[in-house]
Length: 142
Image (cartoon, rainbow, N blue to C red):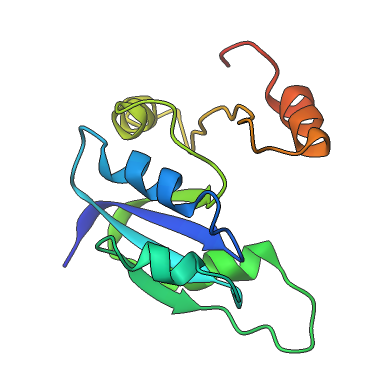
């Protein structure tokens, strides 16, 4: 069944933040979406927590080879039905209930091929990731 948006969420041992992430996603004002969790072998309670939400789970089996984020996302896309794809990591939490609407508004222009939402660190974010987020996204809206 086609949806407007397919939200692909990568996970691996994200039990500390997956509930916050999914709660924020399912609290969006825009409701025409599906959520696909692409899990890379979680050994904690990530999937147990995630199954409390109406999601689809796809397992990314990378065996002895190293993890490749692009392959995980492609697997999620292959299992999606949305017109638009939104990619999210389980430790990323939408800041407000208008996140999806704002992404859709921006992509409506013929001159736009893709959009992204800025990322801010949470109290749980480690210092290396905090610095990376600040350097990549900065404090300004782009």
